[in-house]
Image 1 (cartoon, rainbow, N blue to C red):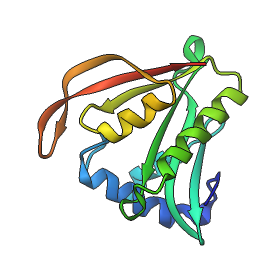
Image 2: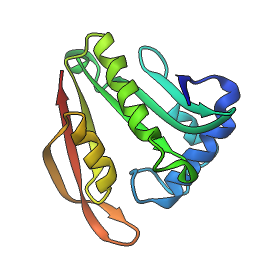
Image 3: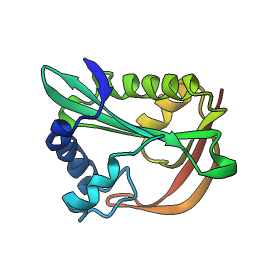
Amino acid sequence: MLIREFEEQDWPGVWRIVREVVRAADTFAYDPAMDEAAARGWIEVPPAVTVVAVEDGRVLGTAKMGPNREGPGAHVSTASFMVAAEARGRGIGDALVRHALAWARARGFAGMQFNAVVESNTGAVRLYERYGFEVIGTVPEAFEHPELGRVGLHVMYCRF
């Protein structure tokens, strides 16, 4: 598997993943009816970047990373990750997290903050904790899960 910067020819594969993840409505606070034009917002512009995880020419995962805020908050990075359902459990999310952390450290960020990790997404929470992230707060009932009802959103942070 290769992780590299997004190229325009990757869009159909990225859109397939974004559509699948967003429509599931269980891990991202995006409108499940998001159309392709709106999904293009996943593609970042510098100083942020979007990457893809590719195997045998197929996009299996994607991540975006950059400053969490502008101005006085720009020293802290953020990232988001999506993996195709058929590729989950194969270490792609792990590789994308490692890539994002290395990217942020190489650019001198002080840490990485995740603003809204759905607390019921325990696989992601455990993955992030393995790399040094801590839950620094939870907004109770801030996410409307399609099966569990209202669940919390964690703010997670990893200091570099």
